[in-house]
Length: 369
Image: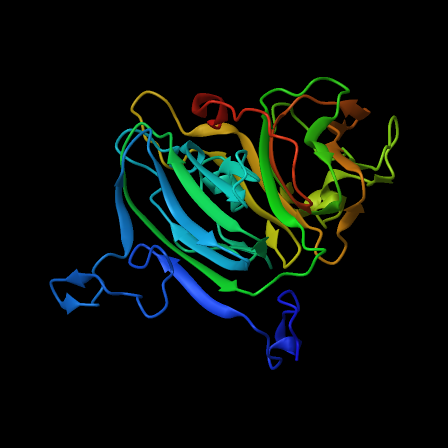
């Protein structure tokens, strides 16, 4: 009998294990067996009586789940509005946090949209293996999130207005025990509004322990002209100092593209967006399509969202890890050092305890340009 909860995929679906499937929603907030959908509506008992958390007030934090383990969260689905009458930056104003085994400091902390590869407070379709975003703002995560004692997921509303409805479902399995070598899921958001000349942007730092790096989301706002993507991604592993063990060949190369993602159309160079299971460039825009004003137009600095999942090629570390990316461009005159606006989410697994994250930037400092 297969007792390992992490052997998944089509080929292992016929194999039995000792898991007990549960789900948490607003109608069954504790995931109790045989108590799903008990709330009443005008249609009667168990007829869609309470499908969401209503009226999440400014400054409040709602707990989506608090689960006693051992267990593994297998899937998270949720959706919210992306604007209120107060503003249109809801997806950067809501903060998702995750805590494992009664820890005081979160192992996951990110603006809600960015965690699901929807930066800039704008939603877009994402078709990848661990993160899927479907029309309209159907946010899905398939990252396995194991816990030995407890799992807690919260969302804090730092938006100026009330969020009228928060719909969600968290699917998980309970087990008698997890393998000894089970690591914990982590994700951290960062931003540097103007990068420093010839100084690499830090995607992840201060990781101590043993684990594997599994993904990067990059929300890049270009502040200079010409091609932006010559910067190399570096992985400093287990004591690397001046030079990393792994250094890539360029930004578009790291995200699985080539030759600037570019083709020619009507005499112009056009960057092509795409989504694949492990790499993607799902978002490009230089317009603010949510705001109309009589006295200004809708142009904004070009925004690009890209993801890269190290699922088939996780970056293993035994002591520590640091991940950076250069800001280098190219023009007719050759390579040049750039300054741009970068936000990112790093995704990794590691042993606990983890190094506490830097204080999350205030919401105003998270807003897109």
